[in-house]
Amino acid sequence: MIPDVDNDSLVYLNGEYVRLGDAKVSVLDRGFIFGDGIYEVVPAYGRKPFRMDSHLARLERSLKAIGIKLDMSRADWEKLVRDMLVRASSDDAMVYIQVTRGVAKRDHAFPAKAPKPTVFCMVSPFKRPAAAAREQGLSTVSMPDVRWLHCEIKSVSLLGNVLAKQHAVEAGVDEVIQFRDGFLSEGSSCNIWVVKNGTVLGPVRDNLILEGIRYGFIEELARAAGVPFESRRISREEVEQADELMLTSATKEVLPIVSLDGKPVGNGKPGPVYARLRAGYDKAIAAL
Ligand SMILES: Cc1ncc(COP(=O)(O)O)c(C=O)c1O
Image (cartoon, rainbow, N blue to C red; front, top):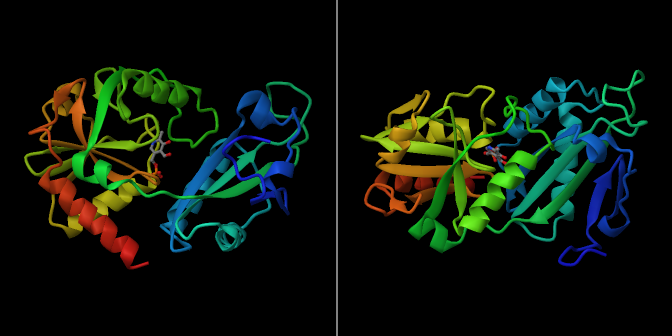
């Protein structure tokens, strides 16, 4: 039994619903041996999935990117997410989906005969960001981005992200901001946004970042609020001299960043552009 885990909650494993405490995967699963798999996290409010289409489209892109073929249609994935939400112990929940290449003799190359992919899904309570984080903002430190060059794949090979988040914990801050060759990439598990002279800037959606589902959403919210939006390479100096910084992810939604490397961002308080995007985000949740 694992402490702090609800072993009685039901999870989905390879076509069956089983107790989390009874769900077992082979030690030869390539997800365990090589990190050879992908995942997705779909947030839900009041048991209604949020931006599910985009999440499932990204799941399909990730599977395609690493050559895992599965007999699951979009409708099957949707049904799985909705079935998990019925089983959730709380109305606001996170649906976690993981697919690995499956179980095979340990050998780096893909097995000649493709094994049956392992499909796992669980649902956990989603504690929305606390008022303190929303109103007072988050602290960050910068660090070099030493991850691989396929950050656009939502891979379960997350060691680089794990070490980045641990760096934040050990520095006593909330999150890291990673830079590659002097340009902004992203946080340990979130996208980072810069506001300068009223414009929202996001890094280019290339192989150096995971394009969050909130990426397109922030773009929509900015446009709806009449805030100019630009996607381009953003230098370290621009981040350091930002009027506002923000981060987004399924679990953090959108939150303001008020310090970087011990220095205040702008006036050190959550800014007006954040307030407008946050209002738009809350409105979209309320309209679900
Ligand atoms: C590395 C990384 N970047 C960005 C994001 C944000 O993505 P999303 O908005 O889909 O949660 C995540 C989310 O887990 C992430 O792990």
